[in-house]
Length: 127
Image (tube, rainbow, N blue to C red; front, top):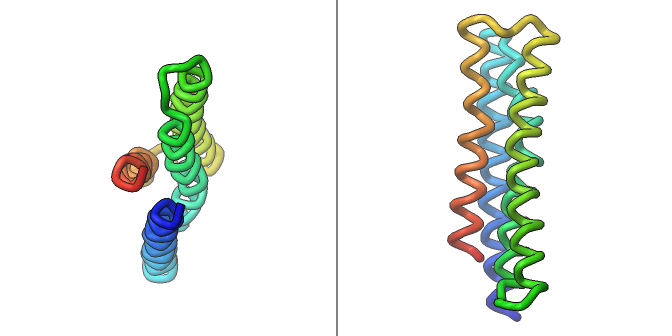
């Protein structure tokens, strides 16, 4: 039990560091170049990355060959899929509503897949 708590603390420390780095980078972009899209899309994608991590922890916590294990695997898989699609759609919706679908701002849509990859890797490492 102590080992699981230690893994959770390490993962949450990494996520907190990632939050600080992302918000600092976004605020630097905002104050230097008046680009607010990075901060907003990062803020949209960050909670979904946490959902991805915790769904992986949930799946590995209940991973077994019984029906409960199969159901937990299905729930975790659906949560990851919905979180990825949700973050991308909310990011595109934000860019559409702020008329940011032109060349420089559309590249910020890659923030969500990068964050999901980080969340997935941390979830696999600290399962």
